[in-house]
Length: 130
Picture 1 (cartoon, helix red, strand yellow):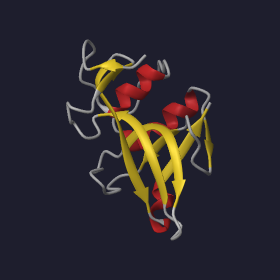
Picture 2 (cartoon, helix red, strand yellow):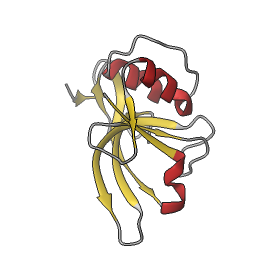
Picture 3 (cartoon, helix red, strand yellow):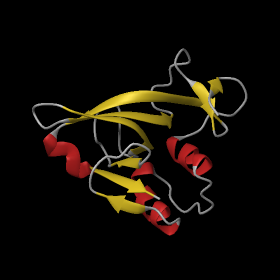
């Protein structure tokens, strides 16, 4: 389970999801490509954010997410009056802030980060559940 940043290794976000869910297929190079790997491992896409779902951010989403995209696990979901969705996402290689990171699933750089998804950016994200 979660522990301070002892043990484990530095992980990219894709490796953390593979470790956490025991995904054995490894045929993606970037986080934005994770949908095919999740589908091959009996995950299915859902249209709304759900606690425990894998969230896949598309390329150049913003908020620190560049051309590789990003992937993590939804921890909480909030909604704002303007239609924006606020997600708390657990993943690795998100902020790279040793004061908030912990070890989980063999990765020592896991933390929880909030992302606010404006209505016009929600199509750049997919959610996957098993």
